[in-house]
Image (cartoon, rainbow, N blue to C red; front, side, top):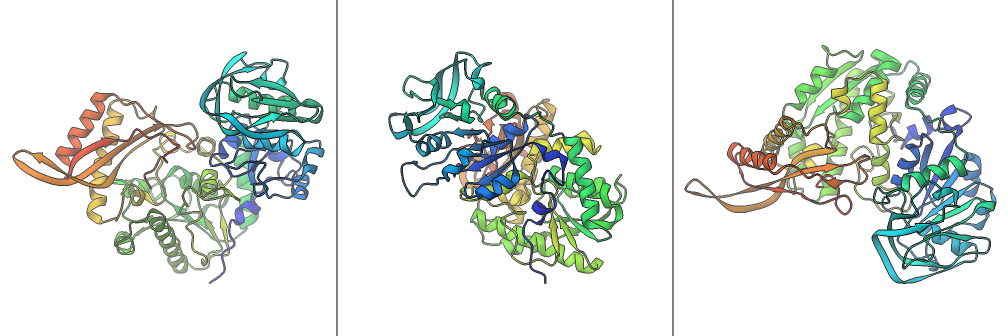
Length: 534
């Protein structure tokens, strides 16, 4: 077997000025260890400016080579005055490239350039009233008194020479500072989160007015360029696509179909962890009767997965088992059809970042990122969507002409119901959650709520409790319902579903799904939770 070349598509689809006009404008986000720094990149892309997240260990030479229009320092959990905390060489401030520091990033600018950073007399967390200086280019369209999202225990006690204060709160004297002559800007708060009322305006000003970006990152161009790059890279080679039927893998499959047609074979693995009737629905779209030029193979591997997952309860272990089996199935199918040079996956940017980037913590590994085995029987792995967020993937799908109902279908994780079942996965538990989830989705659609929700599903807890049904005592499982509103899947808030809908769903699940006597509704936001249960 050939050693896997990890993340080869990062090189294939690298957005450089020499290879791709899309990257004429690029902003780099330097990650100093925060959990949600991908949001910054997402907000920059909402300005139609291409943006990548890189660890703070990215060398100065590499930054010069990438020639970004701007750099953003992220937040992080450390104190800048601790010598063991992440820092960056001072030469970065002499490049002439605009820099915006956020939270820890703002303190790093202050500390590096001779200011003072200390433990704050009063920490700030959450919504905070903030007053801004309208003479600052970042705040000229912002209300004088606005709401910012704070999360810090340290603060800038003294600004560096040449800087001026441009925003403050009742307990934070330097909520923002700047030195326009050196194109250096800093915000103690988090403009990237939706809780900062006018944060997107501030980021737009930095990207357009300070960095001088025109905003020419367009999805139509991305689709065209990616199809061309796939043609050039693949040539006459054969390609195997890991098709789950979800939005990400479906868009990846259609991209490849447009580029190379019958050179593409899509393998759909029915691992027994799909939603009710989903296997047949996927086959109807991508199978021989579907509209796309490709080869389609369905592999029924339910019992294989159940055997591998028997007795396993730890979430990361489940993910890695599912991921490894996923790849092994493809290896076996590839051998049946002959030499296959490339494996295609629908990996997207949140998968990459949540699986660990640089020094950031791993939130959860994804089956198509961190859960892959070390050795696979393919020459290269192609991940054409690797640098896109979920809503960008959907835009790409529409550009490709994929029907809207497919593009906007409910997100479904690669490990499937394996991470919507808390604890051990069994065939019986899968049956329970499939039936409960089908009822939930049906009633949500009947109520006309399906288009307005970011994601909704039913999961199965590992809690069993006493109940009474008729004149009989029961000791059955509790189903947990989840519904969230989100724009980027990086943060999410619990959806306020009408009581009558929840009551109807609860009644139907308890009456129609054998093995369930209790239904609960999950009110947790992301953060602190994740959208999925495991």
